[in-house]
Length: 331
Image (cartoon, rainbow, N blue to C red; front, top):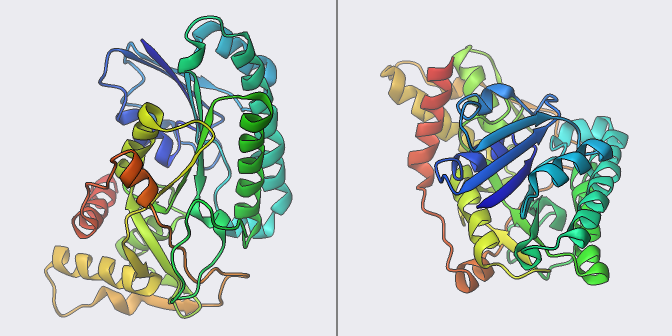
């Protein structure tokens, strides 16, 4: 049996990740989440009664509790989604990101390191997966080539700086202690159960409520959008075939400006409402730009595609429409 410890499992990506594991009876999934603003127990309600699922409310900084969980359940795969992730909040409260994404994360890493050192059976099957972000590379101009795993780390805001800092710790633990770990860096995710603070669900919610859709600056910032289940399947591929001490970029090669993304969502609403007289794009409202707003995120994911034979399966336009319908049905 494979035992997975998933941190931040009640969050957006974490809960979707669990959905890729739960139906396999040979998998045992232990989820920990402190259920802050990003963690929602409703995201995992369908798993609660599963025999191979166990949820524990705690913070990764609670070392005593984490030690008890590790010793009791003896996971061989640890997938770390736990992190503060909202850029705007990091600009207002940078210390919170320093504490949660670096200090608490390193505390957790130390507990995991000691656990790994004491493993006597199947020690070679252990892996720690750090789920990071393409934002650690910083911003690109429109003409620059996408970032590779060897690109210089140059975060542009407190959130991405905190993620980059912990990435360095993770890699250093492989180099110093030999602790088996892998870092994944994904592009922007979208899909079911994303927090309402994020661009796509906020846009959908505001249209539903007939409220203005705030767009930072001119809306020409460029992002590569990846469906969350493609991301989750990539993580499973990395666990199965990835090499310890490596970094894998996970992207979709679907770059689009924020303003065009929002206009596409408005068109989906136009079609759903079947009312050509009203254009939902009239709700778009340009607001003062975010401090230090990165222009473009773009990553080269050829490494995971060539070495591990992974590629995204989801069609962006189709899944964007499905995402809109999901939030509408939930409302």
